[in-house]
Image (cartoon, rainbow, N blue to C red; front, side, top):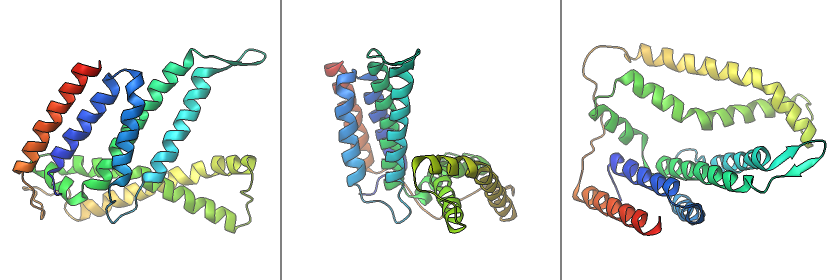
Length: 231
């Protein structure tokens, strides 16, 4: 089903509004529903960040639990009143993760570029946007490459203590190589006419169809109905 990228972005935005505004008791169900749709969607033929997003979400939940529910005052204390705040933050982060995953799996890069060009977004801003979006999966790739290189040189990675030590040691080369890669990409784009004057075009043609209009109207109606009945 080929939809205009703007339609998918609007549906994703309405989903985020639902999860954020609805009471806490409904948010978990909507997260599960969104996750089922996102993970059941066939990913595009590129590296899929689904597992990376899931690990990031669970890691964020663990640290939220430590921040809001655990305290130290000479002894370890559990604060039950922090569970609600932890759950709200955890579900909101989850809704963002589910939304981004669904968009990454369904919106093609060339279609997104065509939409931004049609909206007359400056090409340098489009370049910054794409570099920012793809920085997260590339960041994980580069971290794994450095860890594998360390392991090949005899660095011990077994055990929590050794892995934490390894992650601390890779921070400097990780950030330096990522900044270098961004500079190289920027230089390559400049040499290909990124800042050249003139109207920019796209080879991909996109347009709003009747299906887009129908889904937009249906999504808005469902969102308004759920907000009015469940709040």
